[in-house]
Image 1 (cartoon, one colour):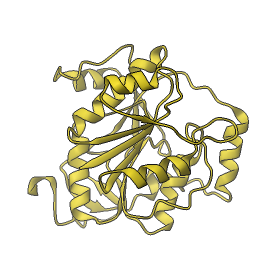
Image 2 (cartoon, helix red, strand yellow; image 1 turned 90 degrees about the vertical axis):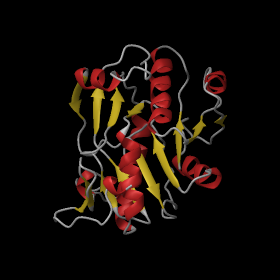
Image 3 (cartoon, helix red, strand yellow; image 1 turned 180 degrees about the vertical axis):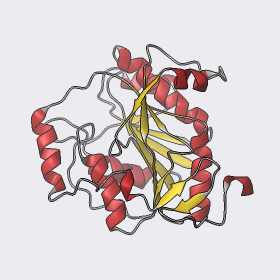
Amino acid sequence: MLTFYSVVKGFVGNTTYLQRNAIRSWKKAVPDCEIILFGDDEPNAQQEAMDMHLHVLPMERTEHGAPLLPYIVGKANEIARYDIRCLINADIILDSRFSQAVDVVSMNLDSFLMIAQRHGVEVDGEIDFSDEDWFVWMYQNRVKPGNLSAIDFFCYRGDWLKDIPPFGIGRCSWDNWLVHKAATEGVPIVNATMMTMAWHQDHPKHKIPVEWQENRELLGDWKPTWGSLLEATYILGGNGMLMESGTSRIMEKTRTDL
């Protein structure tokens, strides 16, 4: 079992169908999942959550109004029903192989962080996930992949994600810090891109310079390769085999063993 948690924006304009698509895809990818949403003060968020049979919780924010990462992670870890958790951006669509990837990784590793490269996809309305060809449509409408530092979901197990600086979510750098945090704690990092990906629904981005600068300053001294897929210590192949990065050693259990 798995707990997703995410920060929603107001359900206004195209953000409405982008977030609906994302949340519905999580339910389809992991039917028995728990979903925790934050942002009860966002426009229409409470009604949308009720319509999806979910709850949306209050959250603390930075002085500039961005969702506060340590609060979000701390609260989710406190109330989550399951020990495998996934912090995910609210515009990210997951495919059906996400659940298989989690199964393989969790069977082989006690503590871990599973991440994947994102691909952009152009979406102009709600996706019918009951149509089994929806994933074919995604591939047909995909655009270029994100860079190796563009991480949009963080699936993890273990008591290592703590002592978090006051990053604002939805701004830069917090995602890279989180990946490098796992590396410095000696937590196995799994690049699952070959088996599953994060599908980012393209939309305009609104940057607030002061918030982005403050997040960057929280990183301190930083090397370009930190906080990216290059820090992965394991690779999950498309065939469900988990291998140590840079080696051919295959872990004992694969998806075919399940």
